[in-house]
Length: 411
Image (cartoon, rainbow, N blue to C red; front, side, top):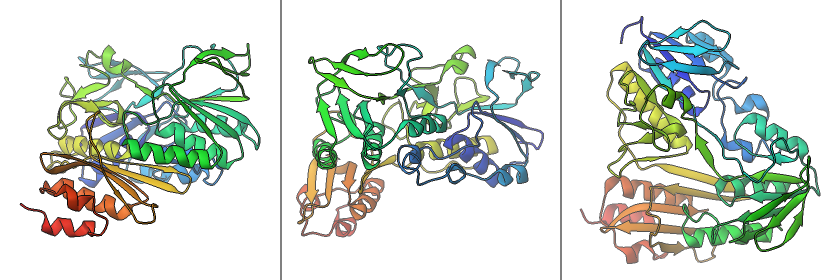
């Protein structure tokens, strides 16, 4: 594209920052304008539930790039400036307190918002979610040793927050409606190990239990559970997932379905508009059908794909998506996507400290989840990328070095 091309990015997260860096890295010399609802430059979100919540990381350390980067690369950054509408036909944005903004290419990196619990009265104090820096700061300000916290939702964010709160000395109760934590995303053995860790540190984790009523009028006082328990508490943290921010896309007439539908280049149903990050729903990222991925890896990959298409260069090679979660001293690293009812093979170290679970389809590794087993994770990424046939018996035998399978697997 020419130096007169105007690229406008809406959203201030990891994907937006990566797109800008990739565009300039490809030599794109056109105009780039970034609009963000938040008052803060794009920042890392994973530490919000861990080091930032624990007070171990300052605000400036969260930034993906310092202000000087945007200034030095000619990026017009407009913070605290929400985009109100998109006129796709005219290629214009309606922005609060600004004249209409023209674009040649629009990139929607609008992410998502924390899903609300309908039972919670509007405006009740003591109720928190954790999606943004502002959310994390508000929650951190309410915490102190001995604070009683009920956390609804046993997903990764919920469990990470639970670990941080317990580390701070809070009394923590986790309520998960499903039959186990991480039911849709983790191998049963991995989920069980994590629950044991939380119990060991003093958290109470209850599965198969929902909330039937929120106690308190103006301020949160506790919950009445679906099995009749009354749990008195000072703070409620709702961690039941996110909703994709698709309102701008829908208003622009773009095809949406649990996100903004995009092709392998990140293009939406309007060829001048791209979507990246958590809000993008891939029609086919890697031959495994459509879906939306919420991860740093996907934010970076989708931004790189869109940047390549905009700059007119070769796209990056697709790779199996990967994720991670830190809870207490435990690091869980995952690669690949497994079916909901996958069968998992297990590989345990002799001392029980390391556990890896593997999903195999057609004699090939499709997904791996490695708890405190970074070496297994690295090898699993290589095995998935190579598509080599795998002997399940060798994969689960701890006396066989996993790295040797990369050279012994049949072609």
